[in-house]
Image 1: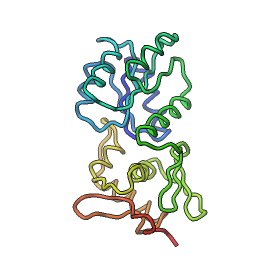
Image 2: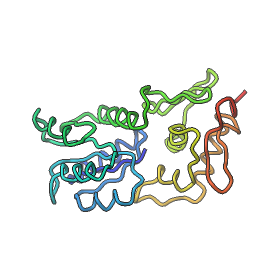
Image 3: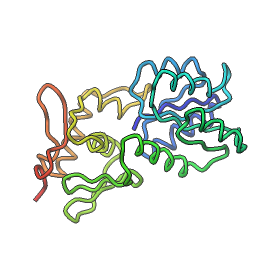
Image 4: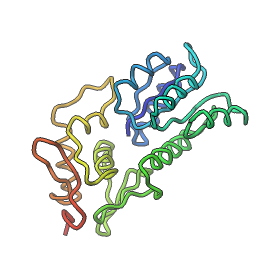
Length: 225
């Protein structure tokens, strides 16, 4: 899941990018409201981690802009302003969650998973499809009684497809989930990881839609025997 981190402390910003990456998130970071607005204009983010006190204004102003525009993008406020009245004001301004600094990285990752799960309309933490159980918290799965382990990028692709099983995702859309701004996109990365996933799940579990991209096979099809 691709996140935008809006945080002006470079040490904390780098720590969040790396730490959330280990939890399966693909995080890009900016340090000002102006850069956040430019990044969000490009789209492609599943959620935002937003500081309030920024060099060029308040993160609450950006949050208000998003909500006035009808933008439903999930936003978690991550800030040192952690008094009860601050939390109430942030949530009433349209934030989906609020976490004070200092914080535990595991708790932040869990809150983000819950926030994005609600956005997807899911109640359960584990995604179930066609005999596959997929756990975003552990980045592991089970199918046919077998436990499956995935590389970070394998899991990212499978998770993206499993969020909306009938939807076709293009190679470009999957690449956006895999790579941050500073990373070079390798031309055949998606194909290689889909090949590895098929070896684990069954060769027809993930369908190639010629000229369009990839999707999970319909329920009852593609199950490994």
